[in-house]
Image (tube, rainbow, N blue to C red; front, side, top):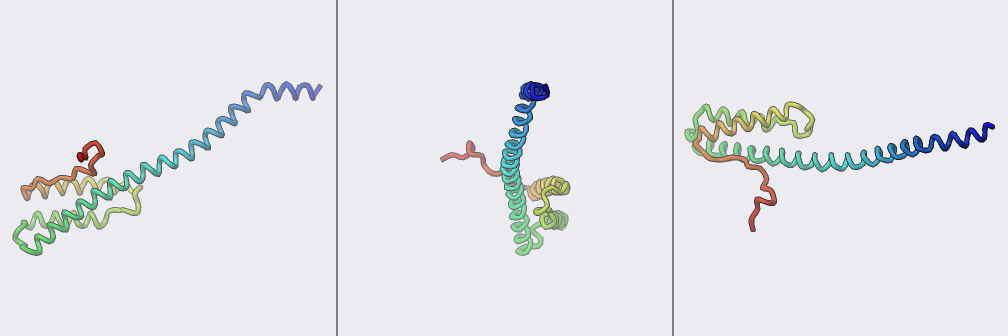
Length: 137
C-alpha cells in the first residue's frame, strides 16, 4: 500500500517540483543578468561622473593659470571660490562611489562653477558627453 501512495504522492507533487525547479533556475539566471546589467550601469555612471569632474578640474587649472599670470585678473572673492572648487575636487571620493558625500560634492561643484562663470561674465557650461544623435558628420 505504501508503494502505491508513494507513486501518487510523486504525481501530486510534480507541479510543485517543476515550480521550484523553474524558480531556482530563474533566480540563478537573474543573478547573472543582474550582475551584468549592474556592471554596465556602474561603468556608464562612473564614466559620466569622471568626465564631469575632469571638466571642472580643467576649468580650475585654467583659472589658476590665469591667476598666476595676472593675480588682479580675478577678484579675491572669486579666487576663494576657485580654491574651494579645487579642494572639493581633491577630496571627492573617487574610489568610494557608494559614499553619500559624493552627490553633495557634485552639487556643490556645479553651484560654485555657475557662480564663478556668472561672476566672470563667462558663458561656459558643462553639457555632458554628446549623445550619438547629437553628433553630426
